[in-house]
Each structure stands twice: as C-alpha cells, then as structure tokens.
Length: 259
Image (cartoon, rainbow, N blue to C red):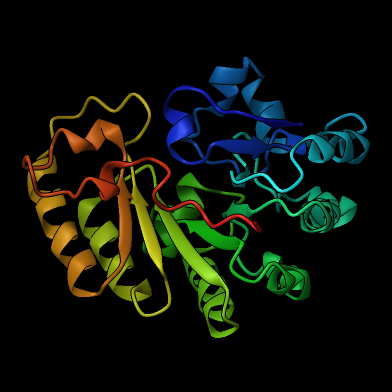
C-alpha cells in the first residue's frame, strides 16, 4: 500500500498511499485516469476502496515503522473523496500512521471534511501537514471544471481552521491555469498557510509568460517568509541563482520524522 512514487510524482513526496481507486471530484484536467488506464466516467463517479486496504496498510506500515520519509495521501485519489464519507478509511489510516510513527502529508480538495479528524491530526504534532489543492479563485470556474470538489472558499476555510489549531498547512498550485487567479489565491491564504508548491498542468504546452509569473510569486513568498517549492518543469523559467540550493531540493518541504 505504501509505495515510492516515480517520475514527476516523486517531487511531492518520497512515499505515498492511495486507499481508493477513482476520486469523485470530477476535475476535467485530471491526468490520473489516463495514467492508470481507467475509464474516465468510472473514475469520476465511482470511487472504490482498494481490496483489503486497511489490512494491507497495516502490513505495509510495519515495514516503514519510524521511517524518516513522509507518506503523501494521496496521488491518484483524494483521501476525503465522497466514498470516504461512508467508509472512513482515511481516519483509520491516520491512526495506523500515528501508531507506527510515520510522518504524513495530506492533500485534498474536499473542503472542511478533514476537520473531523482534527483530534487525531493534532496528535502527530509537527509530523503532519494538511494541504489543499487550489486552482480557481471563484465558484463559477470551480463548479464548471471541478464539479465534485469543494468550493475554493471551503478549501480556504479548512486551511484557516487547521492553522488556528496549530497544524502545519500547505497549498498545492498544480495545475496553474490562470496566473491572476493564482496570485489572488496566494493573497487570500498567505496569513494561514505555511508553504506553497507550484506546478504546471500535465502536458501543458501553452505559450505563456511563465518567467514573469514566477518573478512575481517568488518575492511574495520571500516577503512573507513562506517556504515554497517550484516543480522542475517550472524551474527552467527561474533566473539562474534566484532559488537557493535548499529550494530546489525536492524533499525540502517534507515534514520531520518522529525520530
């Protein structure tokens, strides 16, 4: 169940776990059905629990007891997808990770749903972070392109509540579709987000002025003392020497281990 991501996915975490197949958030830009060779309609509308997922996770977690590497939930699904409302596998998984002292990064578009796990998440202390994927700054675009996901305002509210409860928070801006909307979302979240990650839409070949965009966001990060990581597909747009050696290390933002 716990595995080592490869390729571009490796930039986000050295380890990952997916308790479900399919998602339910119906994001039209999602690359996962293509990569997993899944029917798009089935992926978007019929998430399923992986067979014996909790049993298999316990076996896997034992092998990684006390690991220095964080586990990301999730790459090919959302840990708080609609089926999880019923099955609660993510809640069980968090308890397993805590028991085996495995650091965790959560990434979701589910809005305030993760707050129901707040008491368990706080037990991780600084060995966990909770993040939201943000793409659009308005309800109309989100409803049109991310039909099953929580609205942007709900995702931002989730970040705010975790921040107020002392939980490390982060935002993934991947894919970046509208420059100005991304800038606006940074401004709306900067007070209660600890770190940001930036990446292109998978397969994006649009001719856009990425250099100007990157040159705007880096000062925003530095002035506000925010940690950030720009994925390798965008690093070539950054003026040489502008990023520190630490900021181009893909594991720079990993949460610390329990050891």
